Image (tube, rainbow over all chains, first blue to last red; front, side):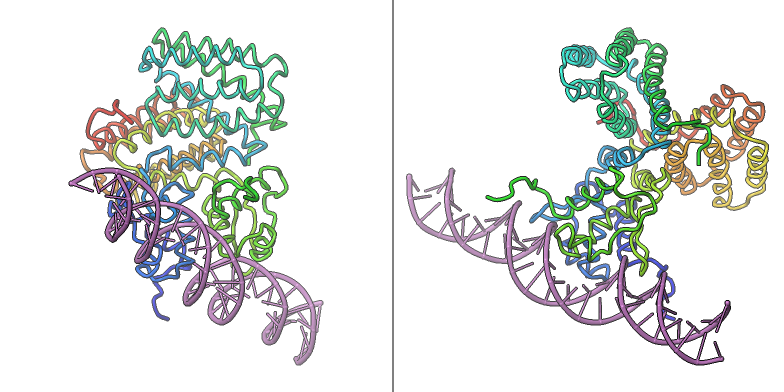
Length: 239
Length: 239
DNA sequence: ATCGTGTACTGGTCCGACCTCTGAGTCAGT
DNA sequence: ACTGACTCAGAGGTCGGACCAGTACACGAT
């Protein structure tokens, strides 16, 4: 029984781990170019087909980037690149998981707003005002949602934490898209949303972290209620 | 120029989107079995090689599961499955991103502790005590870290939010593993950690959400200081 | 009815061919 | 000497087929 060290995994999985290890150890640095698929396959001792699967896996993870005709490169490895798949989770999830996603957002968004209150500059505040105005003047649901998303994106950006921004970006796209599906104008959601945005903005303008935290929590709380209704029943009994 | 609708993407990427769409729309449900690779390739009009790359991508995302000889299945689509890649982000990240990861954990862990305080039962508290004792008696760094991880895992589990648990799970593995590398016993980290765990436990036992929140924040704050030193310099200037 | 066993089928791996795209070097024209 | 279009080697992208390695079910011996 030769070479029992090789765990009971596929050659592709082993290749993925090896490349990841090279990046984690610093042997491969952000932006660096890798050998060609053919050379990598030879180096790791597998076929080009299997090597391509490994590369594809690392590509969707946001670790590698393949440029047709040019070569394979390590991405910048910034949170925005690596957490792109987080949006997929939000897109596919439904039922009680949808509620859990919103609950996580209810934790993160107030914290982001509080951090933003201490950091946002006049230019950022001006952009927030512009989005609020554009949102109020918007006609189609898609347009309104777009400005809504941008409003929150500016705040998370001002929080100066790319990881936080990437996670919230993933959570928001799904939440707001779902809102579109159910019809944005139901139950007078829009006017209330505008009021809530205004309250968040005022707290940010006054450099009031706690005020921003509370305002954001109220805002997400409304979405949470909706998600709770979506989930159907008692959200306590999970799993 | 026929069929200009096909965006400038690879056939594999299109296949990934199609499968994802089938799942998002409910056409494919959790646990369901998919057609064979060969049938899928024929159905979507591409070669088996490219189809396999698409399946591999969805596999690493935790959406699909391939069983050798048995077929391809949709996973349960639970947060734990889908957010497995989150740990990869933590493993690969370094420098300022490491600090940002800890800062996100500093937001989520106190919230999880507060939620756990309202929900944890006597059995859960007993398990926490067991982990604390085992950790105190531990000898090797790996052993101690293992019980440390389990301590936090029990709390996040008690918070009854799988999404929250999955994210914190990813954040923790990297943080604590890094601690091992740098030597666990430096600067008397271990005794202080034990004290902090004890404070968290007391708050949970007393069903005191705010107390648990504060105790957890203090605990992570210590880790944050370490990460800040790792990052080297002023964490304000990001991106 | 039970237990092996065989066999059809599935994913895993490999190979080799060809296509399309990129990028750098070439070379004619200015 | 400079600029530009052109050429072409090499990169990733796609394909088809062959074979290996597991699984699961049906079949036949007990």
